[in-house]
Image (cartoon, rainbow, N blue to C red):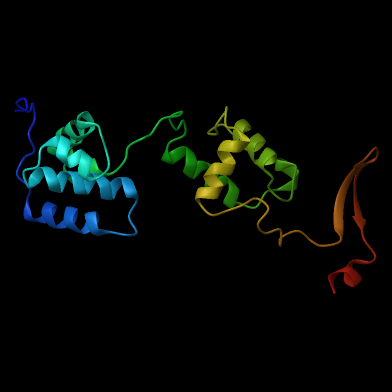
Length: 185
């Protein structure tokens, strides 16, 4: 005979029953969500925690107990995995939006020192801006741009082909490649 459960599973609503049923049969949902949905349905049908865990290939009844307690508090959100470890995200949505906003504007060679964004030039501009991010790394910028499906090297179409500005002792000089047209075709 098992011990009395501290927080037994509450009665499922019809909507929760339907959603868990769909999720438990899903082939495209993440496996952890499918497993959790199956466990919750088995417990709702009256199976004890150990049988529910074993039927989905798990051993830990503590994990089932924790899942049931979380489901009682959060509802269907309990099926979604939470942060699984590692460092917490330092930059919130507003900081990420600030990075995307800075990347989307065309850089000015006079103020930004470049005609095209690279990760290091974008980092320098973000760190020096008064409303910027003083400790942002190039890796963080790369991650934010990748999540937004952007890349600093994706498109360099705004650069004039064959014309380059070079720093010399006398100042900035425009160098023009005479074979530009031949190289384009």
